[in-house]
Amino acid sequence: MEKGDKVWEVFIQKKAGLAFKHVGNVHGYDKKMAIQNARDLYTRRGEGREIWVVPAEAIVSSPLEQADAFFDPSEDKVYRHPTFYEIPDEVKFI
Amino acid sequence: MMQIKITNPFAKFLVRIADSEIILGQRLAEMCSNAPTLEEDIALSNLGLDCFGRGEELMKLVSALENNAFTPDDCVFRRNEREYFCIKLVEQPNNDFAWVVVRQFLHDVYVTEIFKQLATNEHQELAALSQKVLKEIEYSKMHSFDWLVRLGRGTEESKMRTQNALNVMWKYTEELFLFDEIDKTYLSDTDAIAANWNLGVNEMFAAADLERPADKKRHILDFRKGFHSEFLGLILADMQYLPRAYPDAKW
Image 1 (cartoon, rainbow over the protein chains, first blue to last red):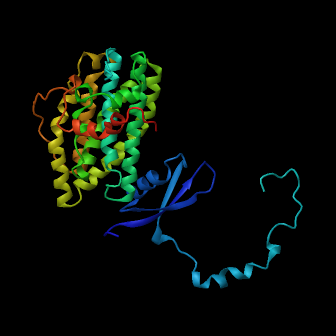
Image 2: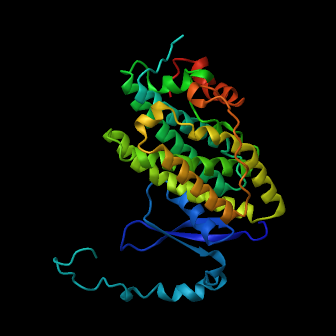
Image 3: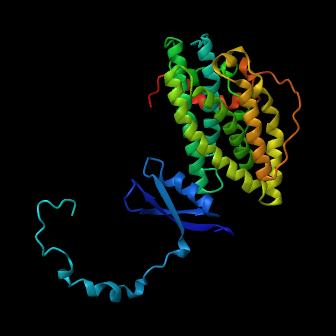
């Protein structure tokens, strides 16, 4: 990577109110270039109405080597799923 | 060989814009896989496809005005150099990235003014197309403007190359504003086009810290009469080779 170049993670919102979804990343020297590059690469087919770009270095990720400690404990706790409730017919979109 | 004659004055007017967009699209298509970065490669291809898209829509109007004596494809692939009416600016080669960006910006500012006036044209289809095109060009102009500022205020090398591209291409801006009777029939205010173009480019020169080349009267033979720079023949040879070699080929 050349000096000054950065990687930016790209998030796109499809419609107002929906969550932004991670779609990939782009290179860019600054915010302006990153957002234009994201627009040119990821919204060519009408995918979005708004874009976020975030410097990849700003993203903190959980340590992969501790994935067992992080995630295994939740595996046998099925009672955490809200599947033990009767959902009334009137409730939609769950 | 098929002869494509454009006689309707409105078609003559539209084909100038259509040809300019098609040739610029071809120039941008040449950048596909050759841009400085992958991201810019796709950006330029997008811009090129936009040019082809509006070129095609305008060609459809041209064909219709000539009673469909030829198709839009015929018009693009079966006309020779002297039967083309594009502005010379868009024929200029991709010598380096600065050339691509300078050419794009000068074009974008110009056609913004053209389409702004066509957006209120009484021909409804043309007006609707122009309104759509204005959004595409607004983005293109923002993109090329930003690059000019980056290059103009970048390194000594980038500034020098950008200024050089401007100095060479500037001579092809004179003819843009030598409007003839046909232009004046379909554009509501040709003086405003020149005035707004000057405002637009001057804003860029200030923002990018570049020098505006001197305006000299050069009397270069007019694109409106089918005169071109030395590059158009080569562009057409490349662009038209396939349909001319295999006239019945289907996509």
